[in-house]
Amino acid sequence: MDALDLARWQFGVTTVYHFLFVPLTIGLGIFVAGLQTAWHRTGKAHYLKLTKFFGKLFLINFAMGVVTGIVQEFQFGMNWSEYSTFVGDVFGAPLALEALLAFFMESTFLGLWIFGWERLPKRVHLACIWAAAIGSNVSAYFILAANAWMKHPVGYEVVDGKARMTDLWAVLTNSTALAQVPHVIGAAFVVAGGFVLAVSGYWLLRTRAPMWRSAARAALVMTAIAGAVVAGTGDHSARLMYEQQPMKLASAEGLEHDTAGAAFSVVPGLEIPRLLSFLSTHEPDAVVQGTEDLQSRFEQQFGPGDYRPDQQVVFWSFRVMIVFGLATVGLSLLGLWLTRRRRDFPRWLSRAMLLALPLPLLAVTAGWLLSEVGRQPWTVAGELLTASSVSPGVSLAAVATTLTVFTLLYGSLAVTEVVLLARHVRKGVEERAPEPAAERLEPSLMY
Image (cartoon, rainbow, N blue to C red; front, side):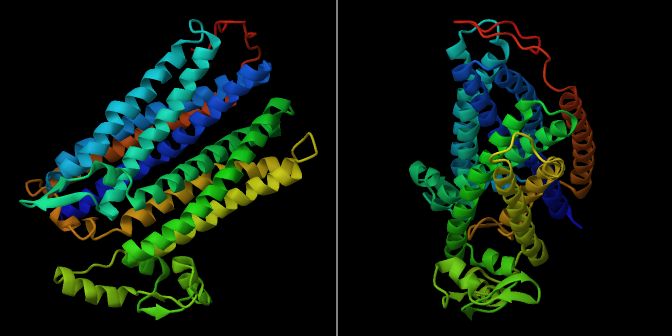
């Protein structure tokens, strides 16, 4: 094992951990804003209680996401200086927009929302949570646009060995980004919906308070709609993958040679004829390129080397993403059907809703592994290899030391996150919520 391997492990570990918070922040912010809107429109006290309850869970998760995300930026200069030198002019633009526009918008209005319960007019306070929630989604757009550029670089030219941006609009409207953004954000809403379902299921097992049924029903609707978005955008992403990242597609299916009418492998040994060709092109007899044939072509195009990603990781990540994602959406559809006319959730359904917490998190993590491991051995497809991206002056011992420190730090943060969330969930909602005033919100004991 060399410094490159450890640098990849370090970035992978910290990114996967950080990514656990991102989708929950994106989806839960909108959900909290929706709850406060419902209270604003109806004046019903249980919507205010739920707003404050899930609002605090949102804040805990947001704070952890910020802390864990800071480390990502340090690693670009610490372990990946050659990568930073090559892509800095292009990659820096969407990251700067994310920090200066989206993150400042998100954090500023979130601060106003936290401390504005006693001070701001009701409508202004509601606008603050919506601005913060929208800001988190805009932030995700810029990050995903930068990530999409590495998979499908556009709007640039290479000058003196460095990528120089020639068209910012082309970078931000990259076809890969336009498919990836709704897919990832839709998945984020599935994660947030699953989180709310699990928390509501926990309380429905303890109490029959109607507010938890309202929260669960709202989460079921959000998860079902978001699941449809994920499925639709996933189909579009598969067709783009066929055109732009054929090696990833072939690895995800375990397809070794170019095949007309390629079958879809459910698991090794169980195939659905022609389905892969149909999903990739909407033509059942289309030719799908295989890993071994692509390897030969890439060697001729880029020179000697192994251009195949870790096929076992890519193959199984794809299936974990699909199975666990479908299980979460299926649970939401079942819940909507069973509770369409009854007041109480069946106890077995409340217990099943607890599974909605781990399943979508595992699905989005597997999706991230598919996306990023499948891009290997490139950091920028066709332009910069991962092996050429690492910092040349960083030793194996230095990377091992920082990897150990980050692992211990993130482990302690994980314990802190779980303890804080569990403590607040067990505490439940406030017994009494302040009554809404005509123009100003009454004091809250929460903030």
